[in-house]
Length: 65
Image (cartoon, rainbow, N blue to C red):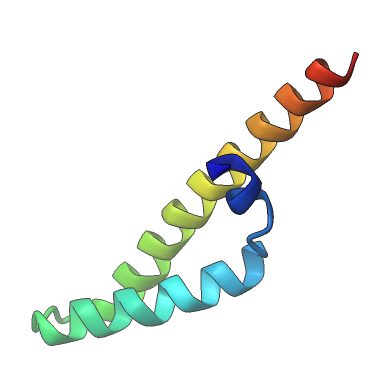
């Protein structure tokens, strides 16, 4: 159930939404380099989603065999 939901996430939209959320967070914390931190944090979060999607799809492929 969880992996099916994760597999439906579009990575580009996830990156955009996560970057916006992180930008608001780091700006509100008063960080002077909030743009770069927001981009890096969104890249890490999106990368984690991509890894989960890849592992889930690989396991689903093995289950079909």
